[in-house]
Amino acid sequence: MTQASAPGKVILLGEHAAVYGRPALAAPVQAVRAHAEVVRLDENHVRVEAPDIGLDSLLKDLSESHPLAKAIRLAMQEAHASGGLRVRVTSDIPPASGLGSSAAVSVAILRAISAHFEHELVADRVAQMAFEVEKLQHGDPSGIDNTVVAFEIPVLFVKGEEPRPVGVTGRFQFLIGDTGEPSPTKALVTMLRGRWTGDTEFVDALFDSIGELTDQAAASIGQGRMGDLGPLMNHNQTLLETLGVSSPSLERLVLAAREAGAAGAKLSGGGGGGVMIALVDDSTLEAVDTALHEAGAVRTIHTELGQ
Image (tube, rainbow, N blue to C red; front, side):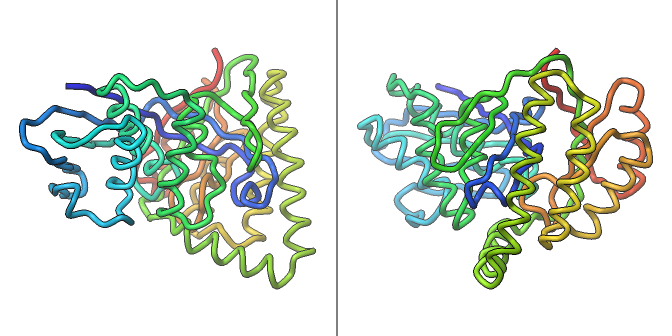
């Protein structure tokens, strides 16, 4: 048996603008992970099990567009492997929430199968392969999810460029609040594409502003300036609302977090549902957590950067 896992991810600033070449700042969320287990079988076939979604099938019976099948086939091709496997996938990352569930599942599968056949995969190659699966899931993804999940470090990401690791000075704590509503990422990306095509100058100006905030946020984290990060997050949320990718449930959680003492709060990921993120410290963590649940969060996740 060979096992591997991969973390979730959270976008601190820059979602959606990253699809259009602006930077995005993202970090792994180690508190939630996807897991893949590979076992050798005597039979010459590949069985795929994903109990979380009720899947138990032979690989040959899954279509080319099935994301789990795509990840398994890519991994087996890369390792020059044939049949005789059982691949079992589980995850405690809420799906369709903006936490990189699909990318984490793909990366876990790629790592497990590669390790099973003793085929070394560097993080950059893992990210590239997972990106191919992300295209099935999201249409025109930015590449953030697969990059952060594969490298497992905070990165400043610009589409088409090498990800830049972001150093962290001090300790930054975040609470992730889950609305419990799926985030229709693909539909929102398509909607924004239409808005950008129809009014390129206006939408590009919003993306430029988001990009500037993101660069400032990376500098703030690198220099340990927690007091600067919160207002940058709040401004990013205002711009995302202007773009039309927020939702009433997200905005309730954002407002509740701020009123309870969070230094900043914004949606994270595709929007339209899914999750938001709040910047907290030891003195505000409990109050913000309580406020998020009272405002309708179905779960909260505590994650940290630095020490």
